[in-house]
Image (cartoon, rainbow, N blue to C red):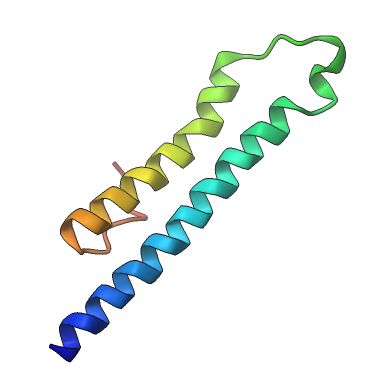
Length: 78
């Protein structure tokens, strides 16, 4: 029972760390979109937004995989 609890605690810690990482990645995108680069010219390249969203999406998927399977498979390539 103790081993199971330690496993769940590890999963919870890892999920929390990944959630913080995803939050940081999303906040970085927001900062990019609010940057002075767009004060005069408000157009943005879609590929730039996608490039910044992809890591956050990957991190969220890692959280889902971790909580669903209990396995630490994040950090691997899709």
